[in-house]
Structure formats: C-alpha cells, structure tokens
Length: 148
Image 1 (cartoon, helix red, strand yellow):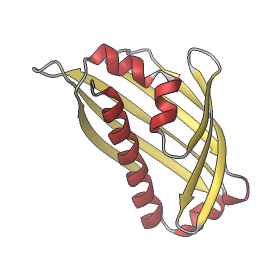
Image 2 (cartoon, one colour):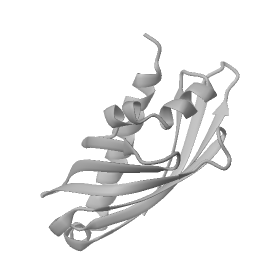
Image 3 (cartoon, one colour):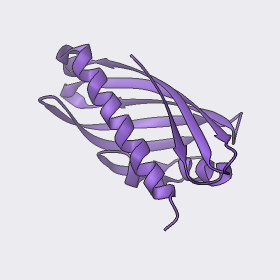
C-alpha cells in the first residue's frame, strides 16, 4: 500500500525540519502515540495505540531516520509489533521545499506492509484508516507549526 500527499506548512523550512525531528512535537501529532523516545540521532522508539475497524492494539516499535539529504529531504523506516493484532512495517520519503511566501511545502510518499489479524481486515479498510491517520498527523503538525 502506498500513500502520497503534499501539504503547505506556514513556517520556514529549517523550522519544519527541526520540528519533524523533535520527539516532543511528534508525540503530540502522531495519533494514539503514548511514548516516543530518542535512542540516538537516527533511532526512535515508540508506543502507539491504534484502532483499525474492530481491532484495537498497542504497537511497540522502532523508527530509523536517514537524514543524508537533510534538511530538504529525508527518509524514515519503521516496524512495530501489536501482539495478537499483528505487525506492521513501512517507511516514508519526505521532501521539503520553500515556496515564494517563505512557507514550506512538504511532500511525502509512504508505504506500509501489515501482517497478522490486521491483514485479515481487508486492504480497503486498512488503506482508508492509514490515509485518515496520515491526514490527522499532518493536520496536527501544521497546526503545531502555525505561529500563535
């Protein structure tokens, strides 16, 4: 499954990049995130509770960042285990571009694979839930980046 989207964030590129690497901001924006701990410059550990259709699960997992193209581009890869509910792994490639107004256009291409009980729910439900979660994250992130 693959998701693509673009969002304009009313903040300069450097500030957006810094926020995307700040666990305190991310924990507020990631739907269901209970804990997000930086293990190193490139590794994070997360605990997230998600409900997909009738299945609710607590996932524990890791995320690895590849910041070689920073701040204009970076990638992240992660995997999580939800116990009896199943497991998931995936990643995203993110690009950041300054527009003429000094705002940042964030574009991402994300992919995910799931297994276990979650996989039996059907790809349409999984894809719509994933799209909804991504939308919630980016809406919350854009709001967190908007100056008060």
